[in-house]
Amino acid sequence: MDLAHTRTGAGEPVLLLHGITHRRQGWDLVAPLLAREREVWAVDLPDHGESPDLPPGYTGDIGPLADAVEAFCRAQGLERPHVVGNSLGGLVALELAARGTVRSATALSPAGFWSRTGRLWARGVLGGAHALLAPIPSARLRQLLATPVLRTALLGLLLAHPSRMDPDQITADLQGLSHPRSSFRTMLAHLDTWTIPARATVPTTVGWGARDLLLPRGQSKRLRRALPDAAVYVLPGCGHVPMGDDPALVADLVLAATRPRPA
Image (cartoon, rainbow, N blue to C red; front, side):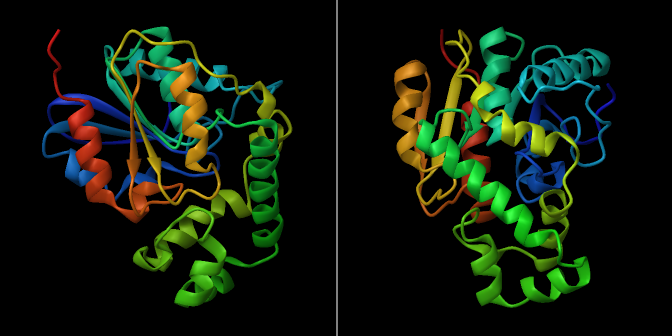
């Protein structure tokens, strides 16, 4: 599968993965900061952005997404890159780390570490947001997002500081949620298949938004128990999508996590 991607910078390769219904442009504020020291590959996951559809019969689990990322890396000649992911992309990054096919993994508010209640909350928020946004034409949505108060009301569960984001960027980002690809409903119906990856032998770093309202940072306690070798940090002032709230902080975390470590 030839995944849509953007490549910038030079240095050790770092693969950037987005969350459910998001797109690779969600990293646009972070990528230039990383590209000063790394070769950055921002990728659209299958059935997202400009990437191809998932194969027929997809059952909602993350395995085929991780398989597609591995195949993409082989096709591009990327041997064990660093991988960084947010939300769904964070869970995929941890799965790749468990498989040992990446050099290091950094996960930002990764999905999959919820309780049953937390899973139902995430499904309700995403499904409700889709139902709210679907009837709104793009031009009208752009008008609504141009108003700081309405921007906060519409995005407060995803971003701690929606007013910092460009309305045009947000409008484009939300198209995947208002008019999602076919896998969205399948994923929501099968979130219980998003199982916690096994412990990895590669360096693993987790950053959790202190103001994440979609996957509250209390879920990091379950992650610490399941992945005790991971270095876990709280990202102050950040919501579920910290790349929009504090790009510099996210870039600093990723650069630190992808530097060589002593044996």
